[in-house]
Length: 317
Image 1 (spheres, rainbow, N blue to C red):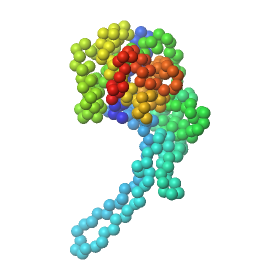
Image 2 (cartoon, rainbow, N blue to C red; image 1 turned 135 degrees about the vertical axis):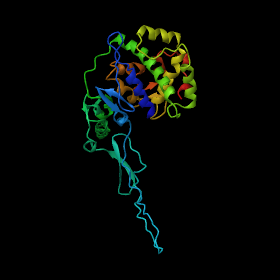
Image 3 (cartoon, rainbow, N blue to C red; image 1 turned 90 degrees about the vertical axis):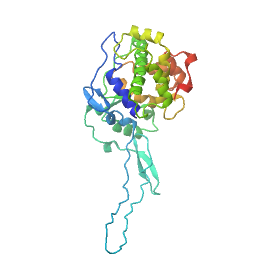
């Protein structure tokens, strides 16, 4: 989770936004420890990524009876509460755990009415049905209730924030997207390297690879750069971009780890980006070259301009 938080920190400092040629990059300052500013409101980790985790009710712990010093020895009885079978039973987003007649845990769809009330507009999310939901909890509870139906199969979380008009992505804008995205990924990795004091953000293999990028004197420093400069840097320092592109694929390929990215696995990257970068959806659709609704590593790397001979599954650490 912390990796995605830092992603958004980097995003807040240098968001992809619209092309440099048409309007300035989005800037924001966030007062949260970790978070991103959307719609002029600081959105913290727990709000942005509530759609990534499902909070489960925690059972009652056994009551501990304290014993003091007594003149006479007495028998102290502990009131033990039976272990709740749901304590360690995890359900996917939109479902909650309940115990059946046999005291076995089972996952059932959550009632949207039981979702916490949204504290502000920044908790709203937009579904692919172009409907604004009060929160990610409300969205996933609704999607769960539609399981097994055609509507439910097509319904996905589209982006964070209320639904709004997203301008069509023009061909020239779509061709510019990878330039900004590659530069962003490289700078995200450098930021993780700089802040990784406890080895919780990068493992040792990752740190060794990023260290070479970080210490390279030819590295283009983070900042507002023209598209021409980004294109020139990619041509001259191509090797610096190979690992960040592979690393990002590995970060997304988690449920399950199978070498393919589904719509759900792309959500942590898509959802925060779409309100600020209107070519995000078009870019991922273009990446799915065979239109099978999954993006393979080869398709992903090709979208970012990585040469076929440089695509290496061993780099997906």
